[in-house]
Image 1 (cartoon, rainbow, N blue to C red):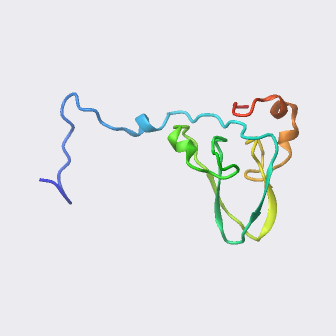
Image 2 (spheres, rainbow, N blue to C red):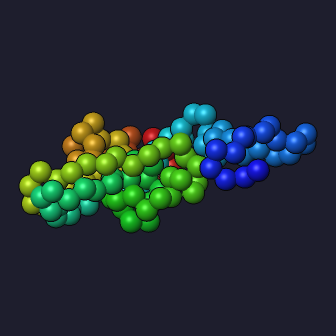
Length: 119
């Protein structure tokens, strides 16, 4: 019997069961440096954005889903613009005010890091 209300039975012996642990790591990966300078963008009031947290997106500073396909365990930062204005969004992923740049990219630690490597 299948369909709505069907009883779920345990998988047969030896059958592979897909578990969340198989798809998502137990400990999240560390963010990597996407770029060493911020990106200026115009945010539109009321629009929701997803800022890349992992640093692996090809659409920096915004998320393109790379965190999921590379199984980083990280998720984008979802935020809504309060007003239409130009802002500098962080791409070094070390800011203390995500998603906005706070100048951390100027630090020796970030400048010495390779693009694509964790801090």
